[in-house]
Image (tube, rainbow, N blue to C red; front, top):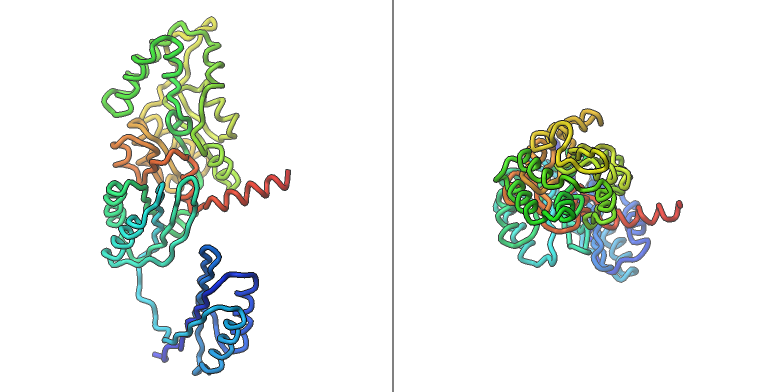
Length: 400
């Protein structure tokens, strides 16, 4: 076996400014070195730049150090050069992304995550910030951990510390996600539309109680839907049109859809609510797919019945599968987002199931959960930062 190559790790730290990276590599180019790895981080204007280099022959360390030290002195920075050997790296299981969201995000959270990772024998390779406002979101790149075991350990920390922590496989798996399907009521919109209709019919409390029981899984959804819709009988059709101006989108909903569409994602909704409202959402947000129940209307009034097959818990999963087939996307490349018991099958079937401000039964089944009210936090689970979104918005403004 040939002797391992000599390695040099050059670490430059100090105040960041334009041209530092270029000048360092120009200095290194004067020596017979090969670049193996580079890591550069800037935190509040302070640069940490690490370069791992290899060389076949014994390097002239004195010349390299003198050259790089002179550069550092000229820049007012500090430099450290360490020497080693390029032994083959031990095999480590695939990379995971651990995403944590908090408001605020306290040091104890980072300590807990780092402790759990260390206890599993894994390693944190990188930590980066995806967002600072309205929530702080950090992403850890972790190698060598068992996904299921780490997810279980961090789920306990998430509850204890009151933050959201998601664990996903990294690499091509996350980049391959291409279809996002969302529930509507209390997910894409803040309201339960059937309760808004019921308030117009003077049946608000009765319908709200049935809705809550159905979302907890205590009532059969289809039967609960029929009972609630029956209370709407006699409402004029104009009430539906009026409510379109009252529906409140979830904070960040427009940003989420706009950003996903820019990136080539297909987006859709599947609702136990009504097509009269999902049709409006499809037009308003530019959605690709929609499935929902349809209120029966005769002579300008609601009859108290729905037409066609009921979109319930199995119906939502079937809609997800149908949309994926239409998009030519395998289920492993889909994301399903919901909050209630009727979303369970859809969330379980998707490649990534997200419980959004959900009931406990849904959080227990989902791959990850979000308790913040901002729907665009889903972007962070895909590694898309708030800075990426802002930059894309600015480019669109300039182009228009």
